[in-house]
Image 1 (cartoon, rainbow, N blue to C red):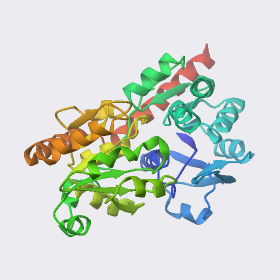
Image 2 (image 1 turned 180 degrees about the vertical axis):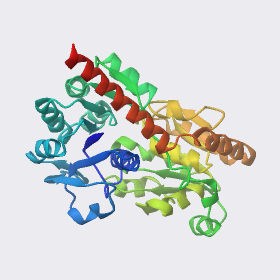
Image 3 (image 1 turned 45 degrees about the vertical axis):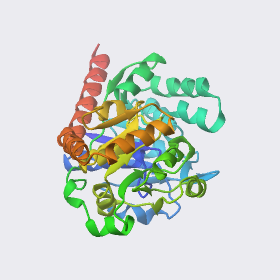
Length: 375
């Protein structure tokens, strides 16, 4: 099968869209499929793709004003040319918004079926950044995804939202997790002593530091006796968060085995953002054997079994986050039980298993297209 992945983000970017696109390309290549990635150019340029599992075509891009870590593709003929030259059987659109819309249009002109993967809660972002515009965001989502042969939603909540807003032909496709990299055995006592020299229990957040993540909700946890909050990630909100979270340790961006070591060295993982269509960091914490506190909204509803692998709290409620963290820090046996149950829950959610499901979706789309053409 010849597949072109058109993605709004790709490594060296660090985010859920980039990571999922990379793992998808890796699995397709490992399975013998001919894969090509089309992505926005990075600030560093092409050499960043030397370790990519397949060829990568970079489209000129500019940094998003006020958020330079995010780059937006500029109009370019490279998208259509790449799809045509690769002789794609399927075009995979990862979180289509700007570049993905051009990929969708090119696929339609070339008669190639497109599978769109919904990954970003644009409506939630509209509320966060503009205070309005949710209806317009859903019109955009509906318009883009309605043109695809199939839309894949990462969670039950996302599936319901898409269907409720009129997006047709939606199926569930969750995310995988690297259970070899993220595992309890990565726990590092030397790192723990460095982060919490007085033996504090370590409560961690991992992710972008941006307004929609609402990391400031950890302020109550920072005030708890015997607790050290550790924040991993970077973004435009970092200066404000350093002021809002007194005593917290900010580690900046961490990746690979270094990130896995941090995850496994936590006592509790706390996620605060209410706009997650999936929430990969929750799954990585569970794979690391760490109990989770997360909002009862979006993707975490599928991932966290309340009272078994962690605790779900009302979204945007700093007191609820603080109380959940305190209940876990005060009970080592409960933390251990939740952590073990979390690890067991994700052990079969490998990227290979998830990738095989994706190939099944491609196969179904191609069969349906063939049936239409034969009719």
